[in-house]
Image (cartoon, rainbow, N blue to C red; front, side):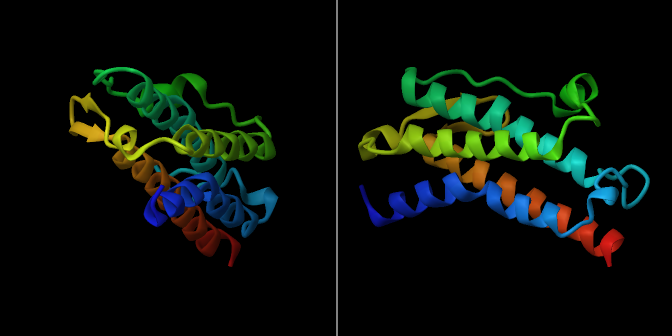
Amino acid sequence: MTTSQDQLIVRLGAASGELRWAVGELPENLWHTRPDEGEWSVHEIAAHTRDIATQVYRVRLARILTEAAPELQLFDEVAWMAGHYNPAEPMAAILDELDAAHREMAALLLDRPETEWARTGHHPQHGARSAVWWARQAIAHAWEHAVQALRVAQIRGG
């Protein structure tokens, strides 16, 4: 395994930690407060990030690593949130599940030869993409929403 692969595994396994930290920057009594009309609260951001990690990135990565050139499906995140979001779900449970999903994705890549990292799945929007590409997407998604949550903390928490 290369140094780059080692670093990707470490970052993938730890990517959710940035969101956990950002959530902690906002007082708990403001976790359900939306910064503006039409924008998500920190609780909604955390739930969405967890759901995409568990329902999209972990599934796609596992399929790419275990199936020959799988056809990957689109995921309707708006419909998923409308049907599955639970505002009463404890934040700790959301963040714990997100952490577990990222650790599981990292474990999927651990000790795999480079040839398996290059395996691809075909996505209707993104075309043929490798396991590495999807792992990087999972990291970027967690970081993107950590920044979003931190911005909410800046606006609402002072």
